[in-house]
Every structure is written in C-alpha cells, then in structure tokens.
Image 1 (cartoon, rainbow over the protein chains, first blue to last red):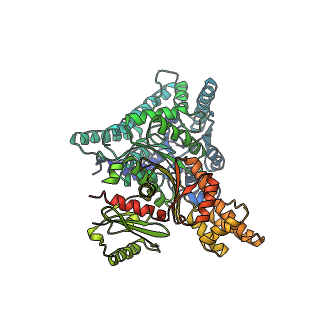
Image 2 (cartoon, one colour):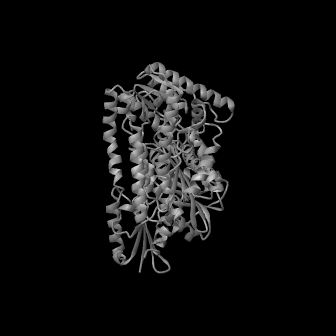
Image 3 (cartoon, rainbow over the protein chains, first blue to last red):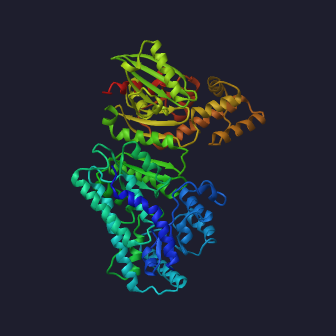
Length: 388
Length: 252
C-alpha cells in the first residue's frame, strides 16, 4: 500500500499548472530553468517563481526532430519540443528562460530556443577547480542578477538574496531528509514515488506549501516505519541510481523496469535526485560568493575532472547500504557515456559492488531488452532469488 | 520427476529435459509469431514423449519467457546460459552468445554469472544480421560461412543492418565475388563481437553458444579474429534451455 500522501503529491500535476496560471494572472513573474546549476535563489530574490522545464517525456521529441538532429539526447529534444509545440504550461507561463552551457547539445539547442522566449545564458566554467573558475562563475551570478533586475524592473538586494538562500536551504533540507528516509532497510518509499515527489516539486510555485507537503510525507513515512510498513520487503535488492537526469513520463523507464523486476531503488545520485541537495548554501558569506561556491560544487559530468561524483557515490553507497549501482546514460549524452567507464571501474574495484550501465532514450522501443538486462543484473546480485 | 527448460528466443525455441540426474532430451523448433502458441506446441510435443508439464518443474527463459503459461518460474537467458555453459564445459569461461536478436558476452566465475554485456538496440553482429545477409546473397547461413573461408575481405562498414544490406547490394552491383562479400559479412560480425569483447574483458576459455555453434567455418573465422580458440559444442545451442532445466531443479 502506498503512503496516503502520494495521492496528494500526484495531484500536484493538476494543481501546479493551475497555480502557475493564477500566479501569472496575479502579475507574478516566472523563470523557467533547465539545470541543477541554475541559482533559483536569484530568481526568488527578484520576486519570481521558478519552474523546472527539463523535458522528460517522449511526446514532443518528434516535433523537436524537425529542427534538431535525431542523434541527440532525449532530454534536449524533449525540452526543445515542449518549447516549440507550446504544450507545457510551465514553459508557456515562464516570462524568461535561464539556460546554461552545461553540454554542447544543450548550448546549441538554446541558440534555437532563444527565439521563442527571452533567455539568459549562464556560462559555466569547464572545471570546478581553481580560483579562476570560481571567479568566472561569480561573475555569471552577477550577470544573471542584473539580467533579472532589468527584465523584471526590480532591485535584488543582499537582504532578499539572503532570505531566498534561507528558503532554498530549508527546501534542500526537507528534500534531503526525504531522500535519507530510504537509508532505512527496507526502504520506506518506492523509488518511483521518490522520483514523483521530487519531480512534481519542480513545478511548485509556492515553496512554503511544497516544504510543508514534504514534511507531512516524511511524518507519514516515519509513522509507517513505526508500524513496520515498508515499500519493499527486506530481500529486495537495494539499488543506487547514478548518471543522467530522470523524471516522470519516459525518463523514469529504467527506474520502473528495476522496480517491476523486484528491486528497490533507494538512492538517486543524479541531478534530479540527491546531487543538488548535498551541499547547502553558506548563509554567513556574501550571498553571491556563497551561491557561486555552492553551485560550482555540483558533481556533474560536464566538469573536468569530476572526481567529486565518485566521492558522492561512495558516501551514498555506504549510507544506503546498496547491493548494486545502475548508471543511466541517455543516448548521445557524451559526458555521462564516457564517464561511465570511470564509474564502472570505481564501483567494481573500490566499492566492490555489481555495476551496470544502461544506455537508452525515452521511447518504448527497447523495453524488452531493458527488462532482460535489468532482470539479469538483479539475478547476478541475488543468487538466492534465482535458486529459490 | 522431469525438469524442463524452455528457451523462447526471437528466432528459435529450444527445449531441454532432465531426469533426476541426466539430460534426457533436447529439441528445437522455430518460435514463429506467437510465443504462447509455441509454448503450447512444446507442451504437446512433450506429451508425445510422455513428459507432462503438470507433474514436472518448468522454467522458462528467453525473450518469450513470460509467455509460457505453464512455467513455474521465469529467469533471464543470461543467467540460464551461464548455468548451461558451466554444465557443458565444466569450467569458468567467457561466453559469447550470438542470438537471433541480440549478442551477449557473459563472464562466468565459480559457475556464476558475474558480468554481462548486451549489444544495444540494434541488429549489428547478431544472427538476424547474418540471416538477412545470407538471404541477400541467396545462400544459407552454412553456405555463407563456407564461402567466406574462400573469400578475400571486402570491407562492410555499416553498423546498421538495413544500411549494410544496401552496402552488400551495391557490392553485388559492382560485380564483387560472392565469396569476398561473404567474407566481408562474417568479418563485420566477428569485428563487432571483438569490440564488445574488448570492452567487456575476457577471462579463460571463450565459449560460443547460440545457433552458430555448428557452423565450423564461422567458428574458425571468429577464433582467428579473437586470436584465441573459440570452443563450442553441438549442444551449445541448448545452453539456455539446459541451464533453465538445471535451475528448474531448484524450484520448490
């Protein structure tokens, strides 16, 4: 039986789209964002709402392929497709878009997308190491701040930034606690429900209401823990998912395949999971400095080197006591595809855990193959299951 | 008590039956369009052999594993192949399974599958690729492999089966010798297996399973490409169903 609150959380799908329309009609501005590197705090300090626009479904991809090459990552095509088909209410109600130069595919796609809506592009350094990189990223924070001030005709004060930092830290904290609840054996929330909770939160206009809802979910899960009600039984293999972003409606297919095959996806290392929650923004420092430091510490494959991803994987593998690691690569995502080699070596040799990389897209075309791969992977983990 | 393993592949269905100790029967038939219908034909065939599924333990594998209504359990062909090869070879190995719709490399350690690689959603390097190419040249798979031994390599570079077919057709148009084209086709498969194996890593004996296990010229050319003798056995096409039958013994 699922937690009761999941119904309310899934209801957000409808509620959120009404909320953004109402907010728009009430004159509230909205900033559409595409990445975990995007500093929501600056937008919030400008009095705007933030929404996550990364495309996670297959539907708009066909339309996107009118302009974009077929052999491109599904997330980029889906995001662009939502833009040109005007089928996403969050895109529609976004007053401005915040883009970022994470990967080659995204940055060139943004060149086409910028004709649809006003867009600001933050230029990411290629490395998270060294003073030069941080200095450059700080400047990018300032440029984004100035862009919003001009665009929305507001003044973003340090005080407003500090308030926004506190609010976002609270949101990070509650999401972090929600994730960590699955460190319990057996997991209290299925991976699919964890994914939905976080994904739907991305469209939440009212941050306070979102925080309150997640608090209630945690309370319900704690209560269930007391009663011994778990999402899975204790024999379900515990999986740590890493790699490319996930989301509902296609981009969740590997999580669904894993859980349908009897696994429990307990930890999400990826950027739509725990990655962005790990480090808090320093509330004492100068707000721009603090924001630059926090966001640059994101262990994404677009950075070179990206050793902190391995450190995070090690921590999560231990904390969640996982039985295996699944590395999801969206087709044509070169940085994650190449990094998979390093991750495999690290997981197998340093962590001593079974590892599998799954490369796919959002479509159903390889459902059978993925099912076989995932089941075979779980069979290598759990011999007792095979022999039972 | 009989222990029955049914391996419903994309092209062929393989069935193996064990008694308490020994392997009693192996048989194969085309899968056809419906896995459920095929599994019913298997049931009837077993009945003619006085083997009744109701009083046996049945384990299904292969992509059609979920379409065997009378199976007690379903396990992937990867685990079953591992088990089957360990039975046939009696030692740890690196298994190359060339199936109808996919090619797999499986590492066996202490008789258990510890790692595997599957080709991506593409027919390159699979049995289906070879079958289509043989059709294009108007020969059987056996003839294709024999011809390849006589030929000189022509390069077929397309990874995609459909494009490779056009490439073969243009080679025919250019008047290239059939033997040379055949060699190019086989080389493109062995080359694909070689790169999968390089990525996966090899350990110990290399063992070939799947429908090509009795095609001697192919095994010869594969061994040459891999620079290591590829072992196999006429029963290796049943590795999946043998493994399934062995695993059926564990069903309580």
